[in-house]
Length: 98
Image (tube, rainbow, N blue to C red; front, side, top):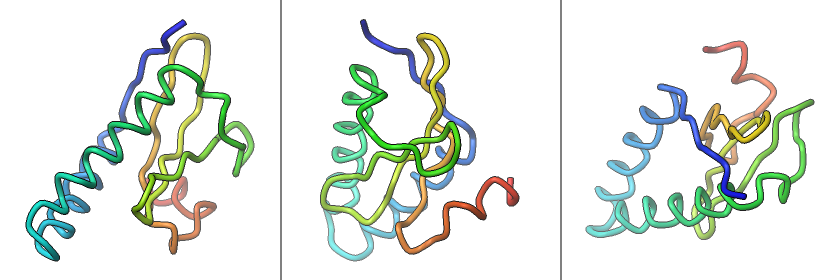
């Protein structure tokens, strides 16, 4: 069964900022970042329970090669991508900063 993905506005904004930053570091690196994110999203569509809960009812999927994690919650056939945070940030703080 394939799950549907829903993104918060915050995720879209953070993804764009991260892509721009990586692209400034090295041409093409921003596209590699997006490819890593897309790979992880495909995994979530197939098996969202694969990753551990880090906050009650919220799981984190780390991006391969990049220091970011996707925080998400699942309900039924929907996976809601709540946030994308750099691994150095404290995940317990982001729900308060919406």
